[in-house]
Length: 287
Image (tube, rainbow, N blue to C red; front, side, top):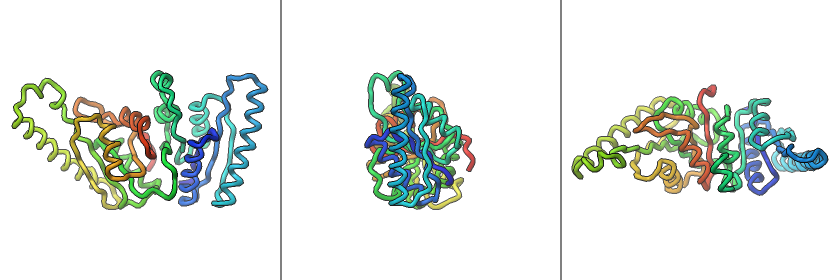
């Protein structure tokens, strides 16, 4: 990893993101590029004043990081909407990783526009890490969701390249989508037929998970395929608590179909509700 971009609005949420990005940079030796976005939809004198203050605060942040971690840091103040500013900055420097803080939940705006995190991931050509938890050490337990699609496989390969945690600390999770539970078929099948149907799905998923893991050329993954009547995102978040995962990894695109998970929508829902860090990896990244 060569460059990490971290966006800060100088809030406590952003402080967590900066701290996590600094931990990753210290481990990888990457350059840490801090940005702050100033809303330019204001009177010029206000924009100018906020820009000057932001530059000063960024320099203070760099001084602190250099003193404690000895990191290679650079900064920039960007004008525009937070989402646009983050994406434009990332376009300019092409980072290996974008780190952002947890969003401030604003129900009405989130429904119609989406959070900065969600909008950034929809647009992103880079892995985006949203930091929710207080960083105290490097990641110990990583939960990687998969629907066995090629984007999901490429996300796993790219995760390995980021080297955020040891390979033996990763768990592959596949949530089995059983359409018969929610379609008319559930009213037609007998209880015995339903049990046999779900058992067959379980066997098929476990075999597919084993074959999927075999395509990953690193370490031994703990593979788990489980059925859930709850939405996939809810099942993933429940599993993250069960396994005490401190990082959830999702591909931002996946299979679409009646019996398959659309990982893009799952990623957005996990980002909205997670109480721990989430890494979303887009497709078509070099490995």
